[in-house]
Image (cartoon, rainbow, N blue to C red; front, side, top):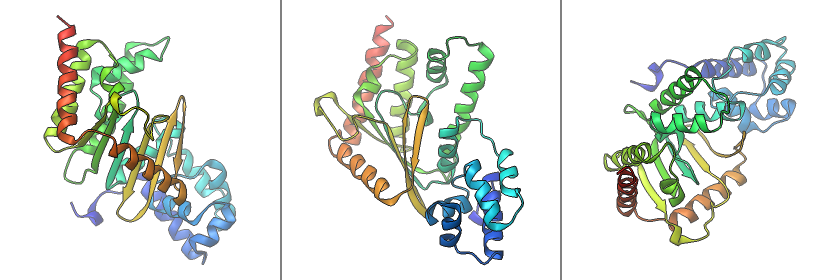
Length: 274
């Protein structure tokens, strides 16, 4: 499908309307950024649909453009199925041309099997119902569809060896999960590298990290903690994150060695079932 014929997402429509209203008002991205108290880069992300403004920023946009609450009201209709700190990341994944992700202790969401995801959701919900868990799993499965089709982003996955060793959902679930990752790597759907325990300390030891690049915009970086996350577009911070990723990657096993290690770990989990 040609890019111009691709259906626009609600976020993209929001961004296009913002760009139109800004242009009609005779403002540059720099000028609007000054009025909204944010960077021109962030205005660019809003206009491309890569990010949504906060309610406060939307209110300032309305004041700057004289749109009488239009963008703040529309923002309410764009509520996501994801936590506030993560909703923007999901939209960016759909637009990214390349994704570089590092996982410290858990399999990244884009690669999780349904059983692995369900075990995770069950672990941090003290009171859960089967319906709630099913809903969460469906949402995560739908998110992974960004990897399907010819327009999917180029995906590099860097895993700490701890990801392979921590049994989530039991040995059978873990074995299937790791075989899935190895299958995707061998099929060329992902580039896979593992940071073995033998590498010792490395530059990403304190946090997971996702880097995203775009054909028509500046790159972004995302880090996450318990019930919180931080999406960065400030060039110096993004560059620092990229350097940290590159340093960790330089300590990792090769793609071939990584696939072999993931297969071996899967077989060890499978053996634990017996």
